[in-house]
Length: 482
Ligand code: UTP
Image (cartoon, rainbow, N blue to C red; front, side, top):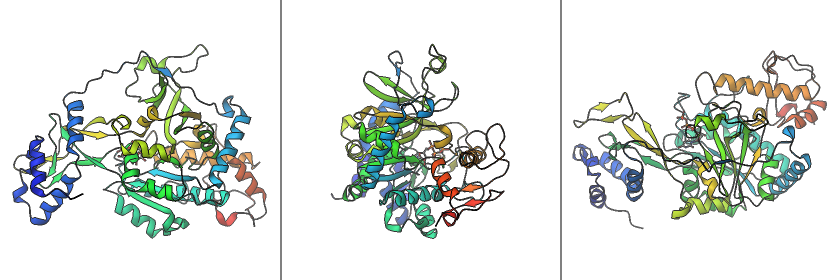
């Protein structure tokens, strides 16, 4: 298809009531004009028009919660689930892995504003002793899975316009953490323009629109548009293990989870943890009619979040931790975006740096506009046979979201240490911990040494391992038995 010319673009923006974006155009140099036009080409005006009609103006909440039910889920064996069912799922998952059907997929296009770290979040140093970056932790988990299942397990990484180059450079400098360049695939997600409350596109500068990543839900269409789905299909991959860049505890490749997905013929499967307390800020897995959906913590009325069943359990117990298995055909169907499979956009009111009529920079003190984002969990109601399985928080979830306090580097470090300590204690090592399970000193276990208590015990008992654990011990590949 031929690209629309600059004058066609100008006309289209004027006709859409967005002609003001050209207010400073004539003052721009030739290069800046070309950049600006390229940015405008990215904007789907028809889509934006629809969103503005739906979302501009004041926020309104018309959701009806009366027919909402808690979603069913498969209990973990530690909480009364059937061990035989889990074993059978695990075997099915292992078979899918050995057959080369599985790829790992991390969404790493977020802005990470709460953490306030300068650089792609995946480069954030996270492990307790060696300070390995998040990306390295995931890479080692993938490498461990490749070795265990003798399968290629390619890795797809979604970046944003803002962090794409830095992410690729980081992997190159780190020699792809031993994964091999050809097996790690990077692609950028889409962006959406921000608009003010009357629906006018916001200029960030004279020759630049205020654009931001289109949310983790944008991953589905980016996977299709950037050719990742084609790459997967060509490699015989039909199952995608989806996770977020901020959670080093995640079991990147979890055979039981994959097996449940395969056995139930599911198009999208999700992990849940029981919410720790009613106000915990996680989405809720719910059911409406025969559809599963996630209702955000900010949307579900507080009374409903506090409801309890006869045996005292929270009624809306199932918290979403953003770990999913997606079928590649499903990604293709939703990501290609026919009208009835398109993900909805959510509005977020933000302080968006802009310029005034004279072109001077303005840093707003209160929200001055709306950003549009899609959420991946909105694909759940579109999926056939979706299944939700329970996982243990301590084995799968400790995100780094904030600089301090809850879900911060400090809490994540402690959660990693608790996990290593549990594994060591299960293997019979005498280790002092406090009542929360935190060991008295820091040590570290690479995913290449152990992925869980079972592999830890197996590898520790063999002669190549060190005989004791002390402060600063780092168990890695070199400590594996001969
Ligand atoms: P968060 O919701 O934590 O957002 O993303 P964030 O942008 O990283 O952080 P804040 O809110 O600015 O502090 C959850 C996951 O979704 C990815 C993030 O990289 C993270 O892995 N994400 C989020 C994207 O890939 N693209 C997006 O547009 C938004």
